[in-house]
Length: 472
Image (cartoon, rainbow, N blue to C red; front, side, top):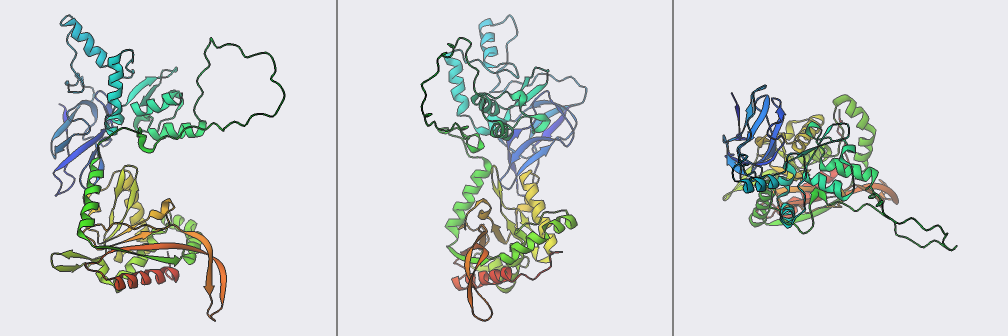
């Protein structure tokens, strides 16, 4: 008996979800708990596992559609059971039986090429169809993968976007190793292959005239520009196309605009000497990873400094509730994580109760599960203060927007070495090379005055510059 695949309820306050991508297609084998499709809600993006082993029989809700929780979105046939052809959909017209309406049957077959074959652009109709495909949502273009066969008979699985990139760069997809599910070649795979091997020059035409046998006159060689592989836009976007916002992008947009309308934003920037932190990390990172199994990053240093500052200035860890200020009992630190498809802020709950090692473990775990779409809705809720790190991409500092309903957010800039004036205990000045960075504070002026924000940041700065905690 077939097993229904349903839209799960990812949290008590979540009533619907959008299917962003099917990771399997009808007729393909699936294993229980293997990722089957991806969804996006107003809280998280997540991969949904298959509820049973067998063969994906049909897809009832295509990628890009939003449905209520507990809606049946597909079915899985039992292992060994015969799988019937999927029901016709708007994007896949049914083929009439042979002998009836012969002309229409030919049109239907021409519009739907067999799986694994490219439609031939031999007419204006097919050219128009190709133009329409360029304007389709990127998620829909990447959702359907195609299988090709290599000379050895191996099946090569790829998406239309991957095949387009391969065609533009004359790359044989059978030579590209695939890291996607079931060996599927992803966009990252083809771009990495091109970056390593370069685009392949098209073969010369057999009818090309032979090169002249005479030698050119002696003289200096003309200056020729270097030939480089053209850069591919990040995300597989074609300049000029119009694509709809993802569910996550819409929610980010709504949240940011609402925050600017709600809070009276003010920002302050502090320069911090983190030479001591840098030296401690360099000397301890190998030992730390061996002892804990986690890499030692800078984030828990900043988290500990924030916790110290909040203990002295608890209003930083508050929120506005009508005409009241709610001073939160726990420090729930939101750590912003940049994803290829957006931004998410998982929360380390009761961060003040954790040791340095506990903070690093929690931050690493949440970051990894955010990137692999394994977060639960309650893990991105309840934050009372947020740390974001634009410096990881080279920014000196950022002026971040407050994550509502919080009243403050700290931005971490990049760390660089530069000469600075250093004053010793005797008051003598000298110039030294130090590791410097900028920290920014964004705060809600309805609740936090500039003097309070500055004094909070001064505590954070002193804590970092005079670090004296043991890591292990």
